[in-house]
Image (cartoon, rainbow, N blue to C red; front, side, top):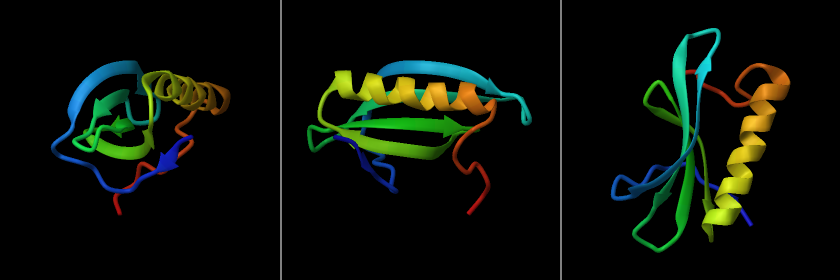
Length: 88
């Protein structure tokens, strides 16, 4: 099960890139990747213009890949990012 998280763990390590797309309105790269965290969990992140705009903690890579695909499907269905990319 995924748990939304709001903070980025700077000590995490890149594990796998799931997908990369160009955000049409901004022309910027959006990257979804899995990171290993120090507490042995995996964090799935979507980064837009070098800022994390969505993330979730998961227990295994298969669950992370499944969620990454769901997020990509949501982007394709709406032809836009289904989460905020504005500055806080």
